[in-house]
Structure formats: C-alpha cells, structure tokens
Length: 264
Image 1 (cartoon, rainbow, N blue to C red):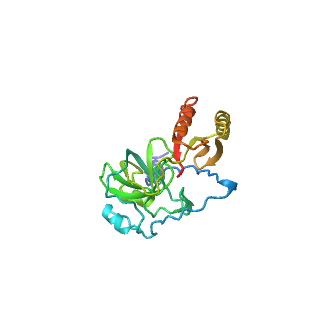
Image 2 (cartoon, helix red, strand yellow):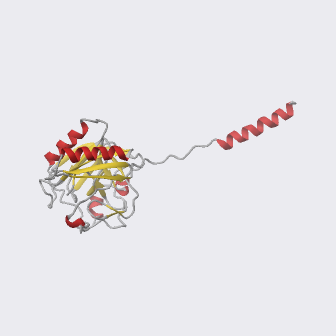
Image 3 (tube, helix red, strand yellow):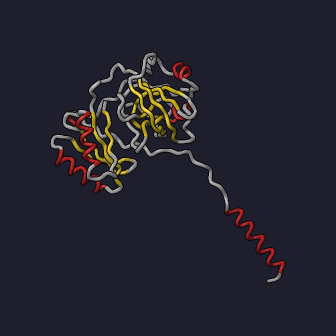
C-alpha cells in the first residue's frame, strides 16, 4: 500500500473511532420498588381505602419547613411544636414513579405529595427529615411501607427527595424525627417479610418451614418487583412475636433479609 492510500485508511479509521466513542448520560439512582403488602381481611374482602387527605397535586417543592407547612393541605401534618417521640439516623432513598399505585394507607402514589415509606412508624405519622450533608429539612407524612433494602431507613416520594436534596444523588444520610400521631396504636400490629428470593422454590421452602414452626400464623408467598417474597403474620400480630420470627429466619440462612413491618 502506498503512502497516500495508507493516509486515507488511517483517516477513515479515526472517523470510525470518533463516531463510535461517546459518553452515556448519567442516570439518577432509583431503588427498586418495595414488595407488595399482602393483606388478609374477614371474608376475603379488600380493605377499604383510607380516607386521609393527600397532598395537592400542585404542591411546590419547598425550600424549608415553613414553606412546606404553608403549602400542605390543612391537617396534612401532625403538630411538630413539641419534642419528637422517635428519632433515627440512617440512609434515605426515593422511589417512583409509580403513578396511581396504591400505598399502604390506600391512597394513590404519584410522587408529587410530600410522603414517605417507613417500616415501623404508624401510617399518617409526620416525620421531619434532615439531610445531614446539606442540612436541608422537610416534613413528610408516612403513607407507605418500606424501604425493603438493607441499610435504608426511609423511602421518600420524588418531590420530597428533590426538596431535601437527595434526588440526584439517589441516597443520602439523614436524621428522622417523628412526632406524636393522634391515631397511633401504641401496641400496633406487626408482620415479617423475608426476601427477595431469585428462585420461587426458595421462597416456597421458607413458607413451608414457617408454616410448620409457627402453627396458627398466616404465611403467604408472592412475587414482587424485586423477586419472590414470604410474609408471615404472627397469630397475635405482636411486635415481640415478629421480632422472634425475624431472628429465627436469619439463623438457618443469614443471607435472607427479613423485615419487621408495622401493619397499622
């Protein structure tokens, strides 16, 4: 090949390399949706939707707590003038969009309301969330259950995540402060969810073991967005029973994640 032809070939190769090399746009972290809550009601009837008010669809993204209180519908948040009754520090994430998906309290999730998912706080509770990096603060209302991911303490709606400065990062370390909720049942009703399992047979094996060990408890196996799950409702639905079951599940197989979840 002569020198001129070699130069043409090199030029063509360079063009192909330039065209083929590009940088993908970064995608914001979006955690997998929590597994569905399997409910049991007398006669197999579906539970009635909660009548709690939801945030208006046009709720703006607040910059601080005062703005958030002014934007929320009357009665949407509990009284936060007193001392918090519960505090927790850990990693927060956000979930969605799952427009019109029913949350644990029966309301529709659209990502626009200032809401959150928590495993144990009573539904309807008001929580002040502080981003420990940016120091941004917001108020959210617990309307759903989760997060079902190791090391996470709360899942925020999309708007709440934007308001507290973790939407683009996907996760952030936060402090949670919950305030007294008028309808909170001090005892509560509890269950345990274990998973996710990649293979359905593994979930069925756990279901069989739980049914044999905890006679009288309701055990269900179901498919969720992240895999197969097993849920067990203790006979009395007491927190102590749920804790004992979650501990037992972790003994034969420490790799199985079990979560104690409050139902009310």
